[in-house]
Length: 518
Image 1: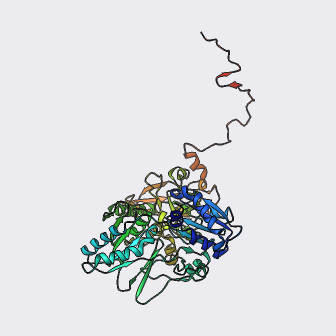
Image 2 (image 1 turned 30 degrees about the horizontal axis):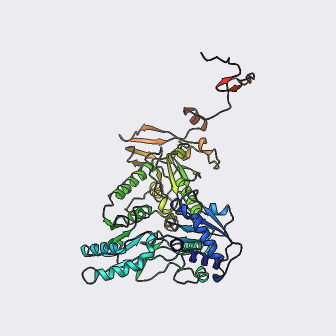
Image 3 (image 1 turned 180 degrees about the vertical axis):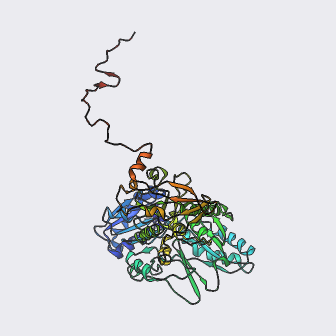
């Protein structure tokens, strides 16, 4: 049992990483499904660190973190800062979003995989398709990649298409300082996505591993893609649509990220639990169509809430400021809200907001807001909704770092020209609400000081209806609400006389007579 635990949670590698960095305060972050092993992992790691043969490290304190403030796939730098941690060891599924302040070491785990059955499924796809196969996978299956490659080559032989390419996992170590440099200095070309800092894990010396940071390689013959912690290269003359994507893993947020980002590609998913192939991605295509509807609905909103869904992913402050500038330039009002994991009850406290923009990591950016009072969209969808003249070409981005590098150059400004709303079925003027609002600083009570309600008037030039946004005062807005919360305002300013209440227990107060049982 101890050997299995040490293998699954990579205790020796973790101890080597901690010794290489001379860390003395370490946060161990576990998702809910792995929390049951937290105590055993901590004890095993302490024994490994105290082993004389491996060079003991004195005074290392380990802290277990669970129930993260935001999403378990992200490194919880906020929780780690509460204990003054010097680094974070992250266990389980990870989105590999770049950290802001702390170095991180990732243990992806080893989910069960029938390598032979998976290789046979790849052979079947290779025989049926004339496209090259690109094998992508969840990080929890990265450990079996070498065995899978060897088994497939033995099974395939000369009876199938040999054109199979495998994605790589660049590393399991992340350093925030150099990743910030890469994010600022590495321009993106079309067809590629940004790559956060990841070090080459081929070198067993973790001390050297922390010093040698890989950068975004540019070559005249290949394009490099990076998504969800895995990277791959394709020839410049090729397109992603020329490949059949073979995904190994569950139907989870990582797979949704792949399907939505490469929505024009043919995609096949191998389910390691049921050992079968699935080609049905229609449900995710329905999600994509609904996202387009939400973009159209967001265009008609006058008051937008910006939900902060992360405090650790590098660049989140940048994208928030970019969203504020975009919303302001489109003639609308925005408010920034920090509330942890959003739900319908929390967002219902802000009925003034007609739409919310959720800033989070790529794998948690999509929120099903069908039960919410107002829709929740991503920063990419906000760019489409609030940027004048922008159209959805089918391209879809979930990582906001791509927007920081490629979308910040031009911010559309509000104009007097009305646009046609597909939701309202008429023309809408977007800038009128901004003209009636005096610029105010963002305060905790700012939401009740502006907003709302649109007046529909008949356009004198044609038969279409022109909807014109009009802001009202906070007092009028609060008076229009049926419930305004607790208030200290009363009609009679004189205080009531003090009355003595009842005393005793609820079963029988002191002023009640005891009735004898009949």
